[in-house]
Image 1: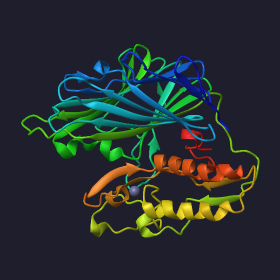
Image 2 (image 1 turned 60 degrees about the vertical axis):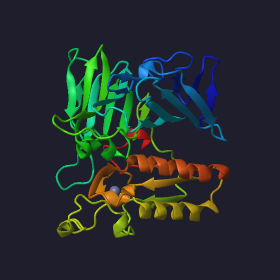
Image 3 (image 1 turned 90 degrees about the vertical axis):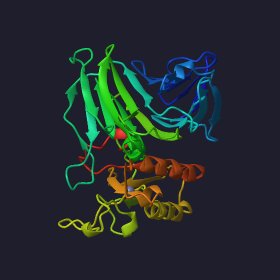
Image 4 (image 1 turned 180 degrees about the horizontal axis):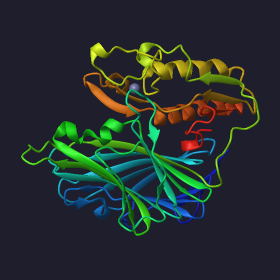
Amino acid sequence: MWKTEYAPDASVSCGNGVLRIATDAPGVDAFTLRIGKDFMLSTLPVRIGELSESMALPAKRRPHISEDGSEVLIEQENTIPFGSEPAVRRKIRLSGELLSVTMDLAMRASAEMKEISAGGLVLEGPVEKVRFLGMPEKGGFVPVFSERKDFASAEEGAVLYDGAYPPFGIVAEGGKSAIDLIVGDDFWRWTNAGRIGGVCRFTVKKLGGSLHFLWHLFTLKPDTEMPAGRNWRLTWAASWRLSGRKKAGETPFKSVFSLDCAEWQDAARAVLTVRKSAGRRKKSSGLNPVCLCSGPALNLMKKWLRSQLADAEEGDVFAVTDAVPHYCVSAGHMERARFESLPHWDLASLLEFRRWANRQLAPHGARLELIAPEDSVFKGFMTLL
Ligand SMILES: [Zn+2]
């Protein structure tokens, strides 16, 4: 079990990550995370028109440590005291080798919606190769990894990714270490510019020898009416493994829930198109896979876990197997059925399910692990075993 610890310099550590939050003086970065000895992940400031988060007032911080000390949650608010006074709020959760962030851009209707950058991330350290997790192949549901690109020998300023949507994930490898970054299940929010008269662009570059993942969230199209300022939420997460991939322990699992099970109802399954004529079933290979962003899927998994609690004993390990992420466009899964289609993917929901499950199991001394299929490319990615 990880223990969360505070140091006098206002840093907080959990597992082998040490999080530092800017305190008395607003800095360019909202927070930095030192990962082991060699890697450092930091945020870039949000920019809304001429206003930058780096002009913000000193951040409020409200740290909460979970009862068992395995997790810390820090809430931060950076208000820019100019113009329409937008604010950037972050909920930063650190637990073992997983960092999850929810970022809210709070804008009044009067905020100028011409150009918005949500900042992005900088990863410093001995990165040798990078891979991107992108859209599934046509007709498929599982996101696909690109070939490894050589980061170490890339020239300064080299662009390794440039797209109108972000990659679902990035894996940066160096030596035996790997740092994974993902956008949350709210993929549609990242790419929302097109729905409100703008364009967005996401790039990964080598700048100053470091990996920069840049989030240009909105640029108003020419001759387009400016939309009103709006709140905008983005979620993302990072994970790391510093000495090769962890494997599942030798202990036999007490009970297993396979995501490949056949019991999902239609409403729990991923869809690639919302056109009625397309039907819900793939022609050749039976039923569509599950989408863990859907309420019915999560309910079934929670029901399974709850039914195990009475028998859970000290040291027991429960497992969700066949864990691979799926891409889906059902707006109903995002509880916004009025939209035709809202693209999302469900890895963050799966990680959140594990967090919930482990809270239920902790009082019994038991835990839950997420197991990718044998030989899957997802083994090791974002803490999957
Ligand atoms: Zn879905």
